[in-house]
Amino acid sequence: MSALLFQGARSTGFAGLFVNMRDLAAKGAGHVVRRFGWAFADQLLSSGTNFLLGVLIARSVGVRDLGAFSVAYAPFTFSLGGVRAVASELLIVRHSSLSEHEWRDGIRRSAGTALLAGIVIGTGCLIAAARLAGSVSSVLTIVGVSLPLLLVQDVSRFALLARQRGAAALLSDATWAAVMFTAFVLLREGGVVSLTWFTFSWASAGCVAAVVGLLQLKVIPCGPLTALRWLRGHSDIAPRFLAEFAITTGVSTVTIFAIGGIAGLGELGRLQAAQILLGPLNIMFSGVGLVATAEGVRQLRDSPRRLAHDCRWLSLALTMGVLAWGMIVAVVPSSIGESVLRTNWDAGRSLVAPLVIAFAGYASTFGASIGLHCLAAARRILRTNCIEAALTLFFGLTGAYLAGAKGGAWGFAVAGSLKGVNAWWQFSRALREYEGRSEAGGAGPKVNADYLPQAAG
Image 1 (cartoon, rainbow, N blue to C red):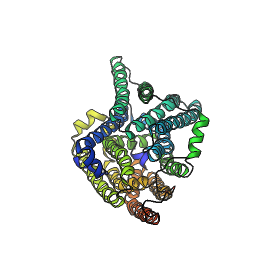
Image 2 (cartoon, one colour; image 1 turned 90 degrees about the vertical axis):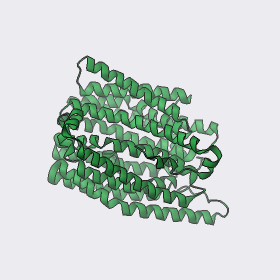
Image 3 (cartoon, rainbow, N blue to C red; image 1 turned 30 degrees about the horizontal axis):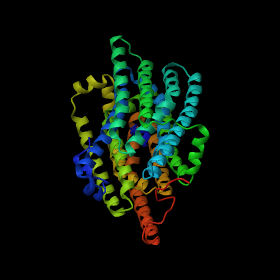
Image 4 (cartoon, rainbow, N blue to C red; image 1 turned 60 degrees about the vertical axis):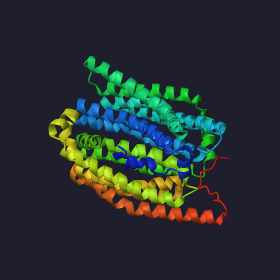
């Protein structure tokens, strides 16, 4: 469900989560806070760019075209999650603590993997676009052509952030935002209101940002054969990370198309409008997750129990953030809302309540998910997401069949409310297993492919 509801405001307390206390003592709190600040600012800008695209389209087109955009945009979110699983996440988990030479080689291979995935999935988009018509075909064509560079851009920003080069990552995403803003202004001045041109401007800006990111890293993506060797070198956890993505994002993508088929593009557009209203929550989750995972990997070997403690507080804080934003949306006057989404305001607002419950359910499991990824507990991550995907698919589609978009939204709410128990049980078991392996290893943790970050052979 995460890819469907969270197509990617942080309190001061977040700056202390997952921070190694010896890091604070050696470098000072100011250094750590600045590092977190750059990372969060970059994620804010990255997610904000996509959020702006959604708002602009919702302001400019009807609910049916908004539903069409949701269908055509799905391959981008689908492939983005897949590349993060087999490229960005592997890079962070396995290469964060290696030498500079090994780190740069990891970036090159990771970017090559993203490029290869973009070419394969982009070709599929072009084939699908040739068989369709209208706005869906146009957006699919644009996404298919630009997808390779868009995925490379995401890998480059992850690489920069993992090496604490937040300012450089921010520059790449700022380039995306600046080019896109400029294009939108030119379109507005020219009186152009077109779903195709809006999407083209967004995708073109992302391709420019990808070039900027690669120039900052001073690397060129590897070829396809080297990318395949990269995946084979991480065969102990890469298939499970990919399976996790395929289950969660794949089920979410299927749900998007199924709701459109069951209830129609108009009802899917209503659901998309409600997700746009809750878009700032996507930014919150993405920003916190990006920082928490990298810091959690650094802290794990020193304090596994502190990791568990911080994961619980992280979920609590995020749940409070979700509820606070839901209250804000509920009390916003209609005149202000209509100035943002125009005719789509009422359609989206009617579904906010159940989606807030769904978001709160996701927040309640977020800390456990971060903990499982820090432990690299791939088997338990896969089990957790299998259960979550089954809940999302069953309740989401059942609700859509019974009551359209409103029924689908309440189905997501029920599914979100049921996920927490399983996620936290899996995390607690994974933590005990990790500690047991550490004790069995004597002075230090015993290396195990499912639990410890390590370099590929």
